[in-house]
Length: 126
Image (tube, rainbow, N blue to C red; front, side, top):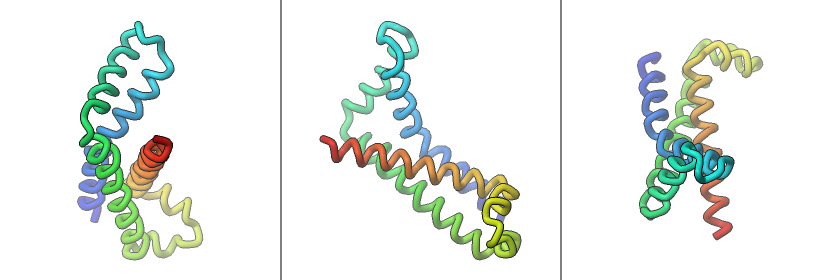
């Protein structure tokens, strides 16, 4: 089961990288003057995404959605299958803190949800 958790973590990191890169570039681009190098590089990243319509659908919606779904499924499955977690239902936070892999899956799942919320809100505003 530990190998499965590690595979899920690796897949989630790879799938979340493009959207986290874009969100980070947006933050750097907005906070720094455009002539500074970090902001210039961030602008290049943002413009690359903006010039390609498929990046919105694939890199900013589909991949985080896959991470969100697989993370929720993994968390739910482990919650019921893992005897250690089943015994700790009443102590939810303690049980999740005890298992670093599940804490990481929860963090990437939450990140995917936040990215999706930002993208959906941005799409609704336009």
